Image (cartoon, rainbow, N blue to C red; front, side, top):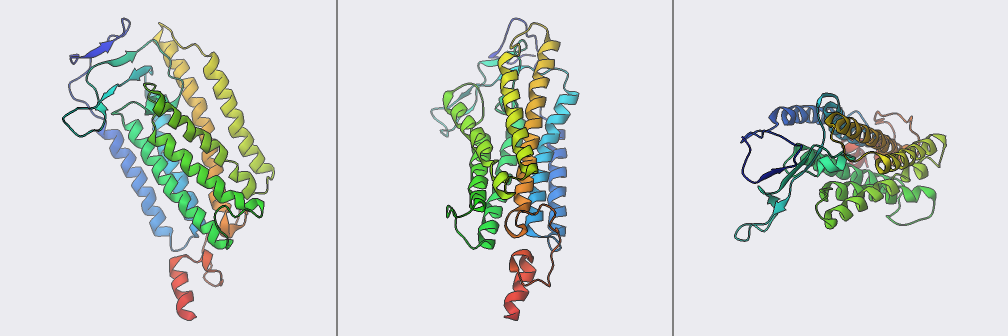
Length: 313
């Protein structure tokens, strides 16, 4: 039964139930994510802060990424859906999904992850905002750890390493704005904020080069990210945007989303390696992840080691 006010294009016939939700997906996502954080908590006493932060960034992104991989592998059809919003004049002045004007376009290709994540009411929007917020919180700790270890302050530029916390902060701005301003394709305000965030993510990725003194690995990672971004931009510019064949719409949508997932997988690798090798690890990606309580450097001890160090003094 189709709800009142739902508008479909002529080639889109769809039966929408009165009430449906994706509790199974939400429960699995919660169990996996919380289990990973529990593991981090249990190993925190034996591992360095850099390792815990890097692993936290890795887990947080990969579980979000797993949702998209599952969708690409199991979803029979992917096409464009837009949910308009409204503000009730006699209620809380916040926008809510509107029952009128739902746009379901089975003939239109979806060219980006952000377009589907921008649909109000889907778990994709919630998952994106959760992922970006948690990673931003982990990055800010990494920035403080790096500055404390090098005994410097933010924006005090003396060496290339001083660009690392600035780049990481750009990552925070990028992740926050990307998640906060959804790409709903309904108004320019959200679109501008979203792409401002994406731009900052790419600017922030340069921290990887400064952290590793632009060695071969960092050049390859940053180059791969920008290369895939150029390829994805060119692909979405030339790909067929509309088709009456829903199989072709789905195939092209999955192709565009798949390329973008590869691009952001590289972004995650850049962030994880940069966070791990920053600060006390001094650009060494192969530094030991385990705490050595015999060292006098309190930066690598963890909270327990710090307390013992202060008590001994």
